[in-house]
Image (cartoon, rainbow, N blue to C red; front, side):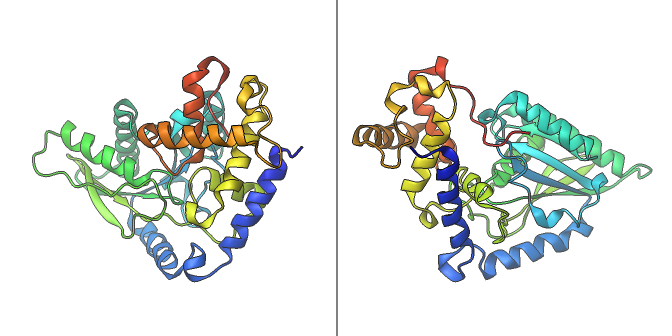
Length: 312
C-alpha cells in the first residue's frame, strides 16, 4: 500500500519535471521572468514589502527572490488563508517569523475584521518607518508566489480602506481568479487617506528551481501550479493519502482504502461527485485541491480537522 510520502514524491517529481520545460509546457516563461524583474526593481522604491504566503505551507510558499533583497525592517510576512489552516500551527509559524525579526500576521482575505486589523498594522508600520515626517505618501507592495491571494487581499484592503476614509469615487477591482497567473501587471490601489497609502498588486512569481519533491507536491496541491500542467489523478491520490495519514480521517469509511495505488471505483466516484457537485458551488479557491475536504466536513464535521501541510 502506498503512503502519502510516496504519492508526494511521484507528484513532486512530475511538477519539477514540468518546471524545467520552457514555453507553454512550463510556467516560468518570458512573461513571468519579466514580472519578477519588475517586482524586484520596485523594492527600493516602496516603503514596505508585504510578502503574502499560504498559511498551510508558510515555508514552502516563500518568494525566495525577496530573501536577499528586502531589509527586515521593511518586510512583512502575511499568512493568507488562515481559515484553511490549523490555528495553533499558524500561531507557531507567526512566532517563528517574528523571532527572525519579521513582522508577521495571519489573515483571511475575505474576513472584514481581519482586513481592518491588517490595515491598522500597515498604517502603524508605515508611521514607524516615516517617523519625523509630518506629511507623506506611502507605497506598500504585495509580492508572492502565484495563487496565494494577493489580488483578493488588495481588493479587500482597497474597499475597506476607502470606505473607512469616507472617500467617494469608483472603486477599482483587481482581477481575482481561481487559477494562478491571472495578474499580469503591477497595479496601484489606494487603501488609506491622511496620510495617503497606496498598495501595489503584483503578478505571482514561482521559480522553476523548486527545492525538492515534497515542496513541489505541496505547491501543486494548494493551487500554485496550473491544473493543466499536472495530472489530476496524481493530485487526487496524494490528497487522499494525506487525508488518510491522520487517524481522524481513517474513521471516514469511504476513504479508508483510498491510499492504495489504484483508487477503487467507489472511492473515485465519490471523490468526483463531491468535487463536481458541492465544490463548484461553494469553494472560495476552486483550483485549490485541499478544499475538496469541504464536502467531507459537511457530512462528518466531528471527524475532520483543519487542513495543514507543513509543520514547524
